[in-house]
Amino acid sequence: MAEAAPTTAGIGNHGAARLPSVDIDSYNIELKDDEGFLGDRASKGAFKDILDKWRKPLKKNGEDPFGGEASEDISKKQLDAMLGSDDAEAAALVHSAIEEFAQELAYVTRRFLKTKAWDKTEAIIVGGGFRQSRIGELAIARASIILAAEGEKASLIPIRFHPDEAALIGCAHLAPSWIFEGHDSLLAVDIGGTNIRCGVVETRQKKTPDLSKASVWKSELWRHADDEPSREGAVKKLAGMLKDLLKQAEAEGFKLAPFIGVSCPGVIDADGAIEKGAQNLPGNWESSKFNLPASLIEAIPTIRDHDTAVLMHNDGVVQGLSEIPFMQDYKRWGILTIGTGLGNARFTMRNPRDKKKS
Image (cartoon, rainbow, N blue to C red):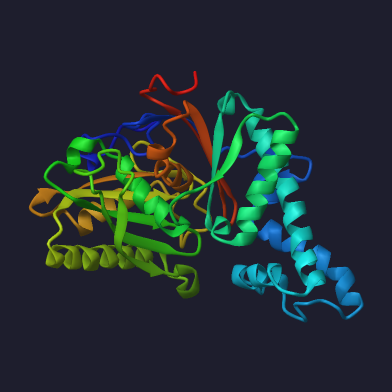
């Protein structure tokens, strides 16, 4: 693996296996079965495919409650509303899709638990946008019950922070706590296949050193998939969003740390290159000539008169990091993020307390 680039200012490596609070046992595992990648069986697209399958017999009789609307265009809000409607058949349709998806999620989870890297996992956080809905909550709860009935000890727990903010808050756990001394906030970036979100995260470290009360003060969202920019255009837009937030935060009186945390899809090398898994991002982000942390340093060389440091890690990992304050009763735990694909990571706490399970 390449040596750490100067973008980190000596505070760690990009994509590191050891972070201040946890060791990362694995991330971005791509499991397969006879039907292809397992993650494809428990993604947002998989749920819509299952819903479509259950709609077909109703369509033949002209009784589909969604009419002619394509399943992929039906929002989570519509599905949640249908779930609670007085139309029993419509609610049963959604329940049928939830049940089948829960069975798939349970199957995929079992496969992860059988891998060496996930051995002795005690709990699994479930993140991603699908979680932020009633249908998502029910599917997660049902999958957890299925696993328990089969003798699995690991429970499924919906991520606590809003999925749109979890990765931003998780960025605060990438850096050692000393970098925030004398500061109360940081810039964070969450890059996805459809959106790029930037935010100012308040650490609230004085009141809660474990960052359990950290929150997003302000964020900006860009749906880059709608604009189809070049890679250079995307980086320029991202840098502009960060500069705008930097000005707003300083005007508000925040004391920003000279640090930018970045959550990004794919396998992240120590020098900040993306080895693989960035195929949904605009342009070729896996090129050996491209380094996002270096590009951000070039755009924002200093923050409050201090040299800027950047740390980047996988998006599933960073979402999981937001849960560290709440997972103190567990030594080994994982995360699955339900989105375009199925993100995954497994963690081991570095400083187990006596009350933790061994």
